[in-house]
Image (tube, rainbow, N blue to C red; front, side):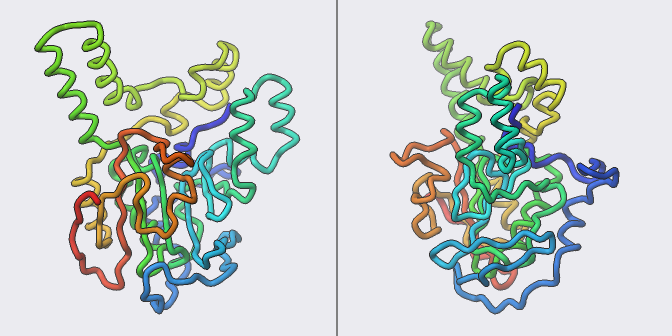
Amino acid sequence: MILNRHRVWRSPGLQPQSGGSSPAPPLADAVRIGLPPQPPDRNGPLSPPQAGLPSRYGFRVKVAADGRAYLNLGCGACSHPSWNNVDFSLYARLRGHGFLCALLRAAGLFSEERYARLVAIDPDIVAWDLRRGIPYPDQSFDVVYHSHLFEHLDRGDALPFLRECRRVLKVGGMLRIVVPDLEVRIRRYWEAACALRTGRTAVVEAGHERAVVDLFEQMVRTDGVGSAHQTPMIRFLERVLRGDAGAIGERHRWMYDQYSLSRLLERTGFCDIAVKEPTVSGIPGWTRFGLDTGMDGTPHHQNSLYVEAIRPGTDTHTGIHGRS
């Protein structure tokens, strides 16, 4: 009964909020209702933040030991205790209710795998619906990161969401985005289709089937990825309580390659846009956080696109950099 990491978003504007009947404001409106901007006096990249900065919603900005403030949006079960982790999945909402989680586990409604994932989450995780905007003041963070979240937004919500990311970044701060790489998936499909023309074998047929599934399955799936492997009773209960994959935000709404994502970042006012690798980043000591890779360097998500960009002091752009 755990929602996956992508439950943090639905198309804004008409969705009621939990605990009330008023509709959620569009994200573009959420940008306008934030606190007044802090003076742009942090001109160096990754400059030290103000310790313990409170947000307008009562959340405090956690500052890491290196003096920087890091934000992980839509973190799901992939969090780090030095970061400010924000998510609206059931993992996030149950993290502070250990007794209830133990009861669900004892009743067989939590598998051992799900329970272990839950207790490994940052205990300070902020359970927040990102349809309401990012719940921190302007220029609060040195780094903003989100992985396999952006493709779950409707195409029309992409720019407002990036504007929110830019708003909470300090001048010189860095945004790192990870999404499925459309270019890689199309290339794999094309290679599989070409292989079929040269000879139909069981191996070639299976490769073609995998390539088609990789392109389309998450756009049309009905059950959430965690529900598909549960018993029929648990699947039924999860469908009743949570809804299908579309209702919990697990379906892909759009796909990106390095060119389309870079254009969006330019339009949002980011500069120094660069394609990276899972273990390569402009964020100092990136691999120690384990957000994109395991301790052995294996990526958490295969065939992904990793893009970084800087919030400049002005709206001038320095261009798009290739893969480094």
